[in-house]
Length: 415
Image (cartoon, rainbow, N blue to C red; front, top):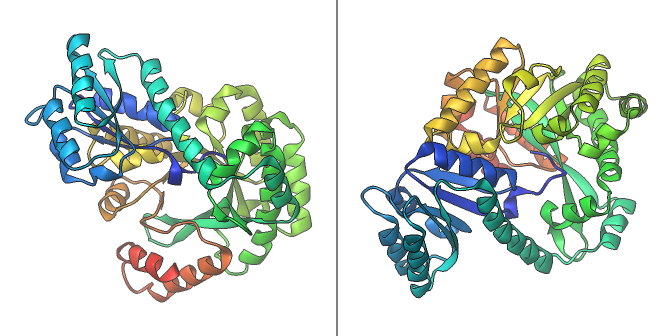
């Protein structure tokens, strides 16, 4: 996940309930592109039996088998559901309108309705309303300004945390992703989605990226003494970095100054960033690779690329977007996308990473289909360097056990 994008920790949490998997997957992809966390389900029972009270938005098809959408609305109201609800249906618009009115009568928060076949733009607009409401709530809780961000950069308040990646074949550490965190003297830990919109609005993405790179390369010169030689530290590359042709040369100079070998660093670009400026992306990616750095495509599957386009770029790694990983156990379409991506990467001899791994079942399945690496909260959250070293020590001390069965234990002891 790009550290210069919105953090998922405060992004809208969306449940999509539709028995047509292709429809659910299309909606889920659109929601993920807006920065939402998404879970797809093919039955109302799955929603009601799960933690339905934790969702910010519920997208519900009225014509569901067994328990239909109208029955679902009544049960959600009885349970005090506070989510905003979007209804969908292939029936006439009058039915949708009256269903929305019915939900309002039950004192549910009805966000709107979408007729099928639906236009993706209508769905995006409805979700954007919720996204904006969520953003304003964060702004109220963390009232930071441009001056606060500039001061934090000047005074070094931004710090780097590192999230581990592990080899699915061995269960051992295989990489680290550097993620920016802000410890504000007055507000405490400020989430990225409270300050990154300010960074982007005022064209500070590139200065902040250079700040991050300086900190990571400096940290690399220390961490390399505690890590196996094959471990790379990943730094997220903002779109603005593609505008600087001299960027690869600047990195080489800075890395040399810090004493950090090129093969210890990897840069991540989102799929959308790459294909919005293909020729410039090719130039930067190729030059970084020629200088010995790894380059990964992040959030693969949510943007515009085809497999043919992807094969034209010299990536050393591809990271499958977390939405497909987190819905693979319940959605056949997501499962197929993950399996096909793994097979494609194998044929191109490219390392493949699964992002957002949050449970044991998914971890084991990914290993069985031949995915190379996994990253996610099941393994470990992002940690400051001191906590990371403790986590690594615990992992090493338990090398006689099956590592994949102990990640949750490691996480509890490291927090």
